Length: 516
Ligand code: FAD
Ligand code: SF4
Image (cartoon, rainbow, N blue to C red; front, side):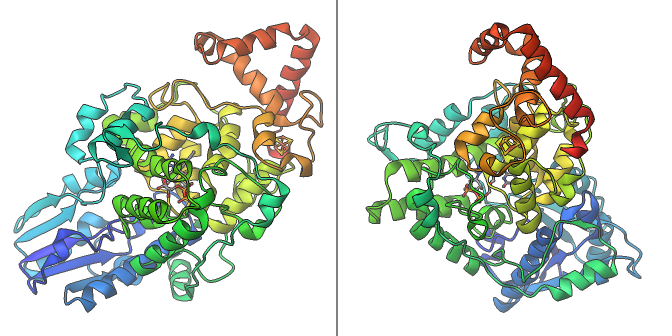
């Protein structure tokens, strides 16, 4: 082989120009690596999904005539060749096959980009190419996202809409407005819950992968009680996309913030669950956007608010957080603007807490390696913000638990959006909320041990007292913000004894966080 090409686990892009031509002199290497499975403790379904998708991808490349070397953990861990990490593996393979060229696609994770940039090969030239996945070209990130600056997602998104001519008509936004958020924040009523769709799930036997994880003592979190339900190849990803467009998109925007505990089998509501397929690059963001727009144009049941809400997530948020990540790394990874130093309580690993909202969101995360955006942001993330959990711990948990968690997308969402640890790069204010937000968007509170209307005392909703403690503590910083300032008038109007009781409840709960 004159060339060795590395394919990382999240680079399963069959549309990449690498694969346009079959060349017997090119060897593709795909490897299960110990280092990728232990930099944090991952959810067992996440590892299974990545390993299964990598193995399928290599089979598909072989079927097209490409030369592929697939290495399992059995081959790479404690191997007789003596290498222990990615660089060692590359050096070994390049020498072994006598290649004069080594190529890789630019990793989306800072950690891997740094590692690969240290690669030294005596006998081969090294070449890095683009992943050909994202919509915004990588080299434009610096101009769109100045380091340390807040760039409004909405402005970025509108620029992207115009530039790529998506949902535009004669230079104006289709439907006459850019944003339909106001009509997109509905709670699910009983009759809505009855007609929720079942999630489309796949069923892959992963016994062999599980045995390998066990053999090599790879620590994992979460549960896997049945075959793997996640799509692990392009065909399944496209099937899920079609299912989403037909079944979920007609109500996607309307209920995208809603949460319910009433129908556990319908755990993903109208969400697409395409994030694993997207982040492993089995499908591209543009083809997902185009499929949604095509459905909107042909299906009268889908109105503009639904499709715009969906396009915004991918063309807007997903491209935006990638820009924030690359513009601000590596400093971003150590931000802790609110000086938070708390410890994650144990229920993050078993879900057993008296707070029903947390129990639902955590259990779902542990059962399916999935929670939707509002569960991640306004329940679990909000809890971590209000209880001042140290950002590194929160990051590590989020990076481990979700099937779609890769640092470039996880970190700006967690550290930036949920924790405000970046001091305002992602959002101008923290997404702090009391229990009333959760009560507004879900039916969790009616089945809770705690009382949503109470702010102090043993039975008061812990989110209420935590919220006021948080606002009180960060008053100097937050009262300047015109979107928050008013709130302090409410606080100041409360009787001193009421304020005191709320703060005392919060302090007590903070000390006994593990018992909530
Ligand atoms: P849908 O609701 O169907 O949305 C469609 C797609 O839009 C998603 O698949 C995703 O690709 C994209 N998207 C939506 N919101 C965002 C966002 N805020 N940032 C980036 N892309 C977005 N997403 C990840 O892919 N990986 C993560 O590790 C991750 N961590 C998160 C951590 C926190 C604290 C929060 C608040 C959000 C996080 N998100 C993450 C974003 C979002 O919650 C998930 O993308 C979404 O829940 C995935 O489910 P879905 O495919 O059903 O999404
Ligand atoms: Fe969560 Fe409070 Fe509602 Fe219980 S009462 S579900 S803790 S918001």
